[in-house]
Amino acid sequence: MAFSAMLSAYLAMAAAWDFKRGLVPNWLTVSGMAAAGGWQLYQGHWQFLEAWAVIFALWMLRFFGGGDDKLMMVLFALYPSVDFLVFFSWVALAATLPQIVLKHRRTSIVSLGRRLKLRLATGIFPGEEELDRNGVRSTWIISLAGVLYVWLHPR
Image (tube, rainbow, N blue to C red; front, side, top):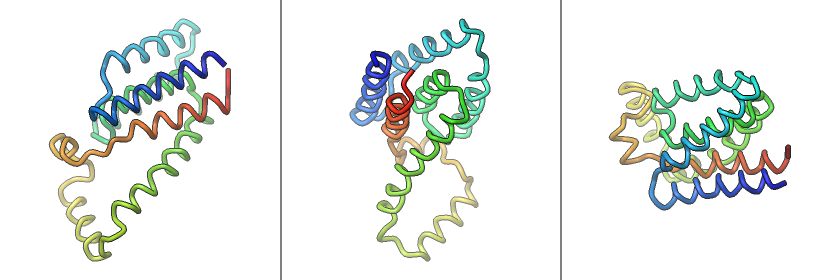
């Protein structure tokens, strides 16, 4: 229970920092990566490195911001399982779909079609400038998944 409370506080701090400043500081994420990854390596568990490689690739494609990726690396080091991946995916989907609907609720189908065509022509993933200008703060979604999982699956 103490671990669940500490992890929840850590994730809440990351989400709050992202809401306030638009980024998650390296001292917060890298220390979490070192602690969680170091513990897994000490235990002789290497499976989390596969998840880290996929998350790193998604960051390279600009699918997520750096703080979001590092926070996911913390969670996948703590829970390197398919069960967590499925749980995380469902929480992310449930939290993201309403945001998409709200963002585009007053946009015509024709306009959405034009935007999709332009996005496919210019590249599916946004560039750094576009992310800085239009990026959506999503650390709260990652934190929510972690908090729910740690309390529903206590160690």
